Image (cartoon, rainbow, N blue to C red; front, side, top):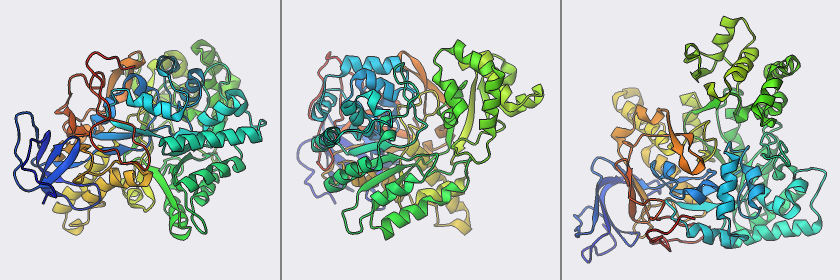
Length: 614
C-alpha cells in the first residue's frame, strides 16, 4: 500500500526491505520506502524502480524509523561554528531542541551569554564567547531563526527562549542576578513582550531554572545564580499565563535543595477550569544519593495529568547516568558551600592554596558528611574509579581505597590528589539509573518522556549523544531474553514500537513540531538501525577533539555499527560510519522547526560550495 503512484519519475532515495516504524506506536512492517523532494511518497511491499541517480539504502534485517528527537541539548554556541552537530546525527538524531535550562543566545549580548552558559554547562568560556562574537548578527527572535537557517545545519533545530536570557536582556545582567532588584512594571511588560515576540516567531516556549546550584561564569558576576532563580512567583505566573494562552511549553529545572517548587510547576500545568500548560521538568531519575526519590515521579505526574487534567511531563535519561571529572571540575561540587568556594576560583594556584588549608578541609569534610543535606551525588569515594593519573599505580582504584592505603580521610586524599595532579587526575562515578528494574519502571511510567541528554554540554564530564540507541539496546536485549525465557515470553519491559514512539512521535507531538513521524507525506527524516550493532560498543568510552572549541577532547560515543544510515529531509548524510563530503560546511539539510508549523520538503536554502559556515 502506498497512497501514491510510484511508477512515474525517479526516486531520490529508496530504502529497501527494512522493518518500518512510522513513529505513531504502530507495529513495524517490512516495506520499501520511496523518497522524492525530501518527502516520503510511498511505503509499499512492491519493488520500487531506481533511476540512475537514485540512492538505494539496503535495510534488509534492519529497522527503519523516524529520526530521533533530542529534547534537551545545549548546542546554542556549538551550532554557530559546527552546524553539522555530527555527534548527534551519527546516532540517528535528526531534530535537536536548544535553549534549555533558562539560557539561550537570542537577546543578550555575547559576553552576557558566555557568562550565562559557560560554568553552568561546563563549556570553555573563551570559545563560547568567540563563537558568539563572530556569529551574532541578530537582535530579535525572527532574526535569530533567519541566521540559523543560513547555516549548513545538519539536523533540524528548534528552541526555547531562555527565561534568564530574556530577564537579563531587559534588566541588565547585574540587576537580574540580585534578588533585591525586582523588575519594574515597565520591565515586566517588556519581558512579556519579548516572550510573545519569540512565540510569534515560532519558538517552542520558555525554559526556566530555579535550581541555585548553577552559577555564572566570568569576572563581573561570577558565582551568582542565574537570573531566572531570582524571579518571584508572581513573575512566573505572568509567564505561565502567556504560555497557557498560546499553547506553548514551559521547560523547567526545579530547586534541587528544597524540591517543593516541583509541586508549583506541576500545579501550573493543570487544566481544571482553565487551559492546561504543557510543562516538561527535569528529571525523573533513580539517584544513588536519594533512593526514595524515584517513587515520586509517577504519583506527581498522575496527580497533575489524570486528576488535574494537565499536560505535565518528566524528562528521563534512558541509560545509566555516569560522569567523569578532571580533578574537582564537576558540577556536583556546586551542591555544597565548600565545593562552590573552590569552583569560584579560576586560578589553579590560588585554588590549590585553598584546598591545602586545614580550615577549608574541615569545612569540606563537614559538608561532605552531612547526612540529610539535599544532593544528587552520593558522595561516596568508594564508589569511584580513577581512570587517568600521572601515578599509574592509582589507575583503576577507588579514591576510598587509596585513602585507606594512605591512612587518611577520603576527603583529604581526594584534595591531595587534586592539588598534586590537577586536571590530570581523572575519575569516574555513577550518579543515577544504575538499577535496571527501577529504570525499566521509570521509562514505562505515564508522564515520563525521553530527554536530558545534555548534548553539547559538559564536554569532559559525560556523553549521552547515543541515548536513543541505549534505549533500543535495552529493548532489544529484553526481547531476546523473552524468546529464551519461557516465564517472560511475550513480556519485554517495553515493546519495540512503543520505544520508537517514545523516541520520536511522542516528543514531536508533545512539543508541537513537525518531527518524529515517517508516514507517507512526512518529511523524510529517518534512521536505519542494525539490531546486530546493539552490543557492548554502545557503552564504550571514547574521546574526540572538538576543533571548533580549540581542540578540547570531549567525551563522545562511537557505536557506528548500530546506526547504519541517517537522513535529514530526504538526503542521506551519514552512512556506514562516514558523513557525506562537505557535511556541515558546504552541505546543509536541516532547518529551524517552528512550533505548530509543518516544515515539509527539503531545507529552504542550501549552502553553495565554498561559502563559509558563518
